[in-house]
Length: 468
Image (cartoon, rainbow, N blue to C red):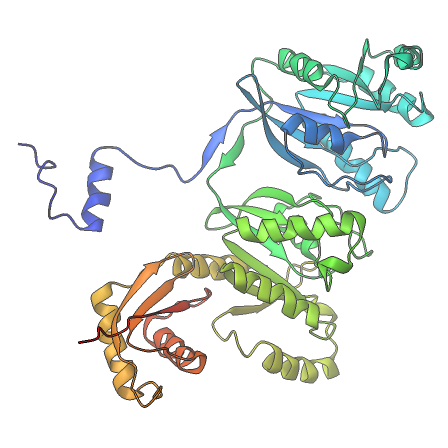
């Protein structure tokens, strides 16, 4: 009988050791060499609608006016058993300035890194000057280029489509991204054009997910760019620059992380219109999918109701949390006094969160963020053994018993930590424990066990006494 067969008395730590002995180790990060298809074209030709067709779900924000997509966004897709990345880009235009020039640079970066380029043109408009300039550049591209003539809704448009032969990129493919016509043919062609060896390997799963959240214009994209050490997100002084969530795999000092830059959350999602409404919904989904949230608050302006709203969304989702006060370099001396008072008033109910004063622009104190995120995640995953928990519970209740209910003192029969992520303590009692008493228990619990950086939930299960 081998040493691993008698497995009745193993503790959790023993199992970890056995897995190591047998060589069953779980990789922290999964890296795959997958091809990339970049979807490019001038603004409002239907690139994001085509992306949603390719990936088979409505994930890219779409609205019927130019310039909704700003950043390069990668989505994982699969066609006939072949997995690949689809990269959505903002509208490309060579003669733009300001934010539109930054968007064009992101599209150019996508073209350079892709294995196959899909250039989208608008059948109803014909060849524009921008299309011609872009086609000239793509004629010199090393990668295969597929020309897609979008908004092709009926066979009467074949004559209009014939014009696109003039771009010198081969046969145009008639497609209606809106109605799904012709998309499968383009995917077949793209998959057939993939090189034997894709240009670069990418991490598809593994790193812990960090959502950068906050109201518009607090510097989330600037922080992502500072960590990535290049222009990963389009940054502009206009509030609401980011629309789709932008994610990046970034190596910091201790670990590899997946950072997700989100759209700023407005006061009420219901009041947002058009693409802002969808952007707010996407941000809520990102918070749900994240493991730790970094809430950015603008230190140079008063802490507002919006900041509170974003904070309560993160707490409701039960995520590990770090608060970063950005733009600390813009803080004026007399603002500091008000800031401390606002801070005590607004954030008194989350004394367990790490609060770090940073500047995404100058790089001030950014090195403090990663240790705070690691600590928050460790506590988010932490479990207290049942025996220890019940010993603590008895002491906390002896020190301050719960208030009487209907002339009866509720008894706590037993407590257990039912789950982690976030830590949830379930107490079996003979009567209801009110919110005030649960807050007392949470405070005592944190004094004993720590759990800094994560919400802790206390649930009560009332067990009625059996009637004789």
